[in-house]
Length: 114
Length: 108
Image (cartoon, rainbow over the protein chains, first blue to last red):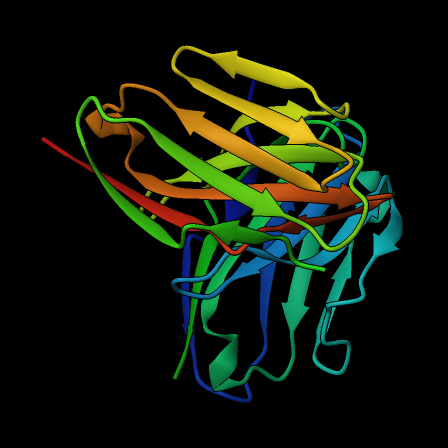
């Protein structure tokens, strides 16, 4: 079974530039999560999708971050414009059906904003 | 809403036991446990769904006290491979939050 795929693995951008991350969850998984993990901290939930609908985006800085999950499969997370404090690893995870099922994580995208 | 873990860090010698605690200020429906090694993605260890439930595999087990809104992870006869940061994850309805994390280092 293929795991959660994320790209790119690394990205360096200047502040005020825009960036997009892509995630392909495990086939058949209804729930998709985007997390931000700052060095030394636990993952912070940015947004949770159930199929193509948003379940929770309460911690997503909506003035600069956006995410979509077209057709309930792949997802993209965008930051525009980026700030220095956005430097972090962005993790995508998927689970078969909701937060009471096991979540599988992708390798993450390490973003550095300079 | 983020669950609080204790201790923040622990150093063990190979073969020693450890307990990691996870406490929530809100009622829980389920608790997950994950281990993350440096530079890697979190790996799922187990999920507990019922109050008072215990689970385990190999020498890692966990308990979940729904009334106390707490879960504990037990590592028995620790091995070098157990080193990493352990996170609990808790669900509140449809929302899911990771805990503050516990860094565990096993030394020979």
